[in-house]
Image (cartoon, rainbow, N blue to C red):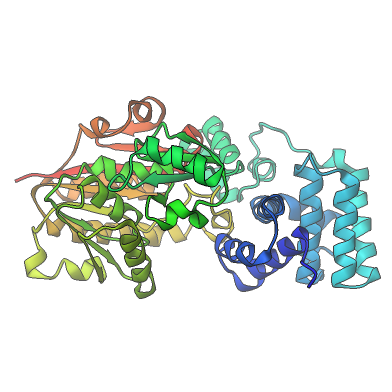
Length: 454
């Protein structure tokens, strides 16, 4: 049976993404696993899918001026085909213009008829004739121009410029458009980092370098998807972003401790805590979603960890259980958040979120903090983290919690638990650190360490 070419796979994934409002990363992974494409074509599909979603507003703004009745008048698959073609012409220098046009026209003819192929050909060739019109200033005070130049929604651009200033806002947007690095956390219960890197080079014929952010981290520069590797199957590593690896380290768990991971799925941080504790003690990994509990258990079993107990429960309900109040030595609350720090990894986030949604998330985070505070023993550590860069969910959330809970204080010793480079490069405050996507080419992350006093 003839295999679908890379661009056709990309078109189908983008169509499913638009029609079903599905997560692009899940659709992409599922499609690539069954595609039968070679590594080079898989990279092209990934580039096209993520690129078209990352640059959605810029592509649509141009296409709406090139298509007579606008994009909304076209069938969904024709819209996606035009985006595919225009993305290649605008952003992929290594693909010749003629090839980008011809392949897209061929795809349109195969999927539709000659009339649609002519439309696609006319639109893309008109862009090439007039492409000098479609350039944007690299630096401007206009929110609309910034949004189009760096392909972010206007409300988000306005917010970031207001909070962090123009230079930082542009640096974050530029970082969000660069490909995410692939990193893994080595399972220190089974292997050390140097031995893991040697095995990766031997077994996967790939290249790896140690992470500067985490002594447990390894950057996969070449060698395929780690999730499909024999080393992953053997439980020697976990796929995790470098910023995320800092969270368990910042909590500084010790063997024998009783720890609660309040919003644990899919279990990356729970298992990291257990590894740092030498599989000695207890971690209660909770999550509200039933379907996510199997993800946690699967990770726990693969890594060979015995000390993690899983429980499907809303931690606000757990706080009502008398035997759990004041029970835990340390609590990790990796709170549900807007996810604005992981846009480069999940580009659909910036188009699916609205400014108003953050208000409801802030309220939920407040309720979760209130609940876990009751579960922590005196002298214990509460670590609050998010993968966002919105102050209302981060610094301001922690400040309000501390004002309402005088028995908690920020831990000034947080830098002692993190690599010196984090203190040097990121934004810091008393007991907290905010990492931006451009600081280390990792996810944007917030970490606060609080101590419960008598």
